[in-house]
Length: 296
Image (cartoon, rainbow, N blue to C red; front, side, top):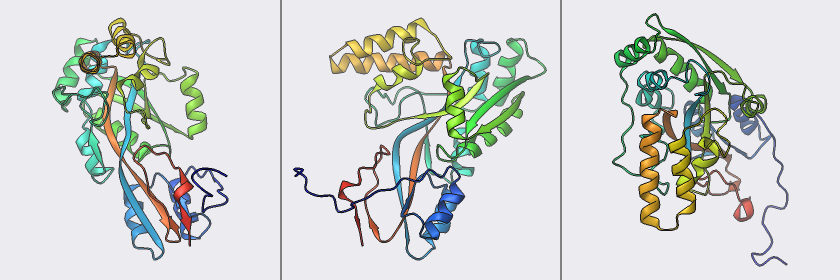
C-alpha cells in the first residue's frame, strides 16, 4: 500500500490531439475530460458552455525564438539584434494572446533563480532594425525563415505569423513555416532550421541553469556558440554561493542580450479546460500529477 493511499482516479488515458479546436470539440462532446494549451479566444467560448470549467495559470514556461548564429546571415550579431528590434512583443500579447502573457526582458522569467529586474531587453524600433540591416550589408532587406510548431505552445503558430508581419515593416522578408510538433522537434535536433525557430522552456527547476542545455555549446546549443556565455553557464553550475550565482546569471542575461542569442518573447499563461465532473488543480509548471484528482 502506498503511503499516500489509493488514487481516486483508477485509470488515465492520454489522447494526443495536436489541433486546439479539435481538442475543444472532443471536450464539448464528452470524449475527453481535460484539455491543455487552450487558445485565449477558444477559452472564452468554452467558459460559456455548460459543464465546462476553464483554469488560467501564470506559467513557468517562456517562449522564445532561437537563432541559427552558426550560419549566415544570422551569424552577424547586427542581424540578430535587428530581429529583436523588429519585434513588438507587447503587441503580440495584446492582439494574439488577448493579454495572456508577460514580455521577457531577457532569458529568465521573474520566478527563476538568477532573474534580475535591472536587466532590460529590447524595445521595438523598426527604424533601428533597418539601420542595422543596412550596416550588415542588407540595405534592400533580408529574406529569413521562421519555423514554428503548431499547437505545442500557447498560440505558437499565430505568434509566428504575427512576427512575420512585424518583421516586414523592419526590412525583413520573412517566410513562416509551420509543422506538427513531432516533425518539428526532429528537424530541430537534426540542425535543419536555417534562421529562426520558435521554442519554449520551463518546468519545475526554476533555476538559471536550465539555460545550459538550450544555449551552451556543451549542452544542446545546436545553433549557437559564444565562449563567454559558455563560461558563465559553466560557472553558474559549479558555484554554490547563492549571491555569487545570482551575479553570474545577471551577467549571463546581459551577455545573451548583447549578443542577441535569441529573440526574447514572453512568459506564457497556461490555459486548461475540463468537464465539471473532474476536480483537479492546474500547476504553473505544466506538470499534471492527477493523484489528487477525482471524478464525480
